[in-house]
Image: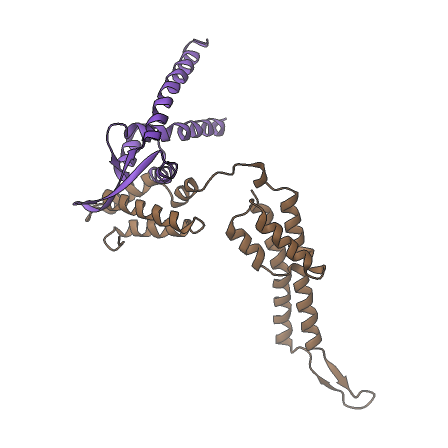
Length: 195
Length: 115
């Protein structure tokens, strides 16, 4: 089916439904969009006024509501925040300090928990691999490779090589701040999302 | 208090809605839009018509209804729903239970006594 013959408001509604349903299995979303598109085609005939189209959309409800009705309800206590989930969050943040193994253990706990959606798990995995330890290693590496060395002194003209230029220093501090704050923000996000 | 009432009514709706779908299919098959419009027009039964499509999908996956796509002269193909034998049995059992439930609740609400 094509959305080209749909009223613009209906086409926009379908776009919002697709966006809201990104977390659904692909086949379910496709089917849902197909059904709602058939509904809109039937309920809003060609030439319908904007007011009529909006009335139909109003009766349908918000795309988020439809997607929510599509998702299975949490069914067991295993899906609540428990020791498993807190351990995953802690290890993802600090586990990298234990030669990286702790972070991998956190990753296993993250993916084996039912408290998060796949989207949450990908966020926990990718932001940032290694957690805070990765930030420290990156910071130490940056300092090591840009360390300033000087020769001369005591009446001689001092020659320095390496080191940060003022512009590069600001950028480095910003990058470091982002690297520190991102895993912390991810941990807060995971703690809030665990249902 | 209002939130508690709304939650209770929402749960009640959720509990009976699927059987209302089955009841609409008792005598004839219907296509999705037709079902959704019929339920949407029943007073106080549905707040958002769109949420019925996930319900129809679930009933189909549970084998309570089965569907067939058919061409339509008026527009895109339509998905027709009809009851399976399992759906018919569920509906019959619900009707018996609902009558008992309704009579007991009505009696309590009207007289404050158990019937």
